Structure formats: structure tokens, C-alpha cells
Image (cartoon, rainbow, N blue to C red; front, top):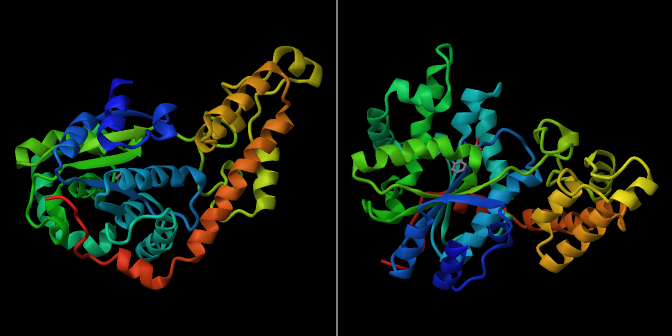
Length: 355
Ligand code: TRP
């Protein structure tokens, strides 16, 4: 609570509902980022995406929607890493296909509203040379044993996987972006990401001081539950597990009604008497992500928990919130031109207001 108050005081912005609701629930050194901002100094944001599927689902959009908010709050440069190399090494995909998916996915990322004068989206395949000096320095500072210990690789894993963590670490250092920061090493980096990415950045923070670099700061989100409930994984290859950015209003309605795990009771009588279980109800959990109006969320949560609202009704509440959101995303994506993608993905000078 004290850090949230400091965030609001220093940035002059209202904390995002995802901060207040504990969806972005943990951090490393966010207070240092705020002190740096209060001192009028520059900073930058770094996030990324592994391009392994054509269409993104709502869970994929969460870090980007939050990063867009942070870019507005800090008015700072943002770099977005498309790890086409990572997906080639980990998945049964052709390298060219991963590269192409990176460009396709960039359109969805751009549709989140990033400032074209302040944002670089880069494919590892295309950009790697610029950060190779930093990649090498990181590789020299981390041993095989450390990487095995952090990521749990066994001895039969391909050597590309062992080398990759240095590639994800490198954008945490401003000198990986000479067009933007020259050779400066003093511009701090803030990384919004899902909690599963933390191992990469624990490794990064561990090596940073030895290389004469600042440790990146982080802000982590918890996982967005699959339609089937928080025990199952939302997967881009399982149509029924997620709502995709490409889904039609009809598909959204059908999927929520058919698959969204319900905290409702066996019979209407039981439900009226006992109330719904908010802790397992996916419609309610998704509303905590996408219903930004606190009073509305409370109204729906109270009504469902008391039994006054039935499962079909809370599903309708969710459908009414996410359908326009997906439609807005589709409209924004349709406006993203090939030229815009090209500009976002060209290494260039970005606007940095502070010095
Ligand atoms: N490894 C991430 C994934 O598979 C992609 C990624 C690269 C990333 N750099 C990042 C995610 C920085 C968050 C922050 O999706």
C-alpha cells in the first residue's frame, strides 16, 4: 500500500486497477524506478513475446495493456523483444515461420496503442547483432551449472536453449539499444512481465553488477486463468481454453457459456441458498481483470456470492465486458498498416524527453 501511494504521488497518475487488485502483485526495485523518475531522469520499459501462434488470446494481451499504461505514465521509451529464436528452439516450428509470426503478432501489440515515437519492436533474428556485445558479456558471466540450476534443463537439451537466457537478458541493459541510448549504462530498465519470466531476470540481476550495469527492475503479474479454471493452462493451440483476439461476438458468447468454469451450485435452489463460489468462478475471475469499474465489480461479486445472481447471469456480465473489448482490439488492429509495422520494427532513434 505504501508503494502504491508513492507510485501515485510521484507519477501523478492513478494506480492501475491491476495494481490495486493484486493482479500485478509483486516487484523488484520498483521504488528505485520511482526515485529515478522523481529525480527527472530517463528510464525505459522492456517486455516481450514469444511468437508461437498466429492469434493472441486475452491472456497474452494483459502484459501489453499494462505496459501501454506504464508508457503513458512514464512517457518513456519501450522495447519489445519478439523471441522468434526462442520459439524455434523450444517448439516444433520452422525458423522462417517463427520470424513471420513475430511480424503478425507485432500488429496485435501495436493495436494496444503504443507511441510510435517511443517504441521499438524487434525480432531477435533481425536485431541480434546490435546486442551481441552484451549477449557475449552475459554468457561469459554465467556458467552452465547456473543455467541448469535456474531453468531446470537436463543434459539432453539442445545447446541453443542453454544459450538463450543471455538473449532474453540483454535488452535489460540500455547499451543493447545504441540508437536510443548510445553507450549509456545508467538508464534504468523496468520490465513488466508474467511471473513465469522471473527466472530470466533473476539471472540478469545477478550478473548486472559484475558487468558494470544497473539491475533491471520488475513488476510481475499473476497468471490469467484458462476458461476451464485456474488449474488448467490457457493454450494458444487449444481453441476452447481461451478467448482469442480474433474471436467473433458469437464465438465469445458460445465459449463463455459452454466452457467458463462455474462456481455455481448443482440446482437453482442450492444456488439461491448457498450462493456462488467466487474463488473458483472463472467468469468472476475474468471480470476482476476486465471490469475496471470497482463499484460494478463489487455489485456483481456480491450478487453472485449471495445467490441473487445465477451462473448464466454472471456469464452474461462477462460477455458484455469482453465482447466490446475484443471488438475494439480488432478495430485497432485493422488500422495497423504494413508501413507502421515496418516503422515500429526499424532500429532508430526514439523520443527520450529526459536526459
Ligand atoms: N520468453 C517470453 C515468452 O515466451 C518472451 C519474452 C522475451 C519476454 N523477453 C521478455 C516476456 C521480457 C516478458 C518480458 O513469451
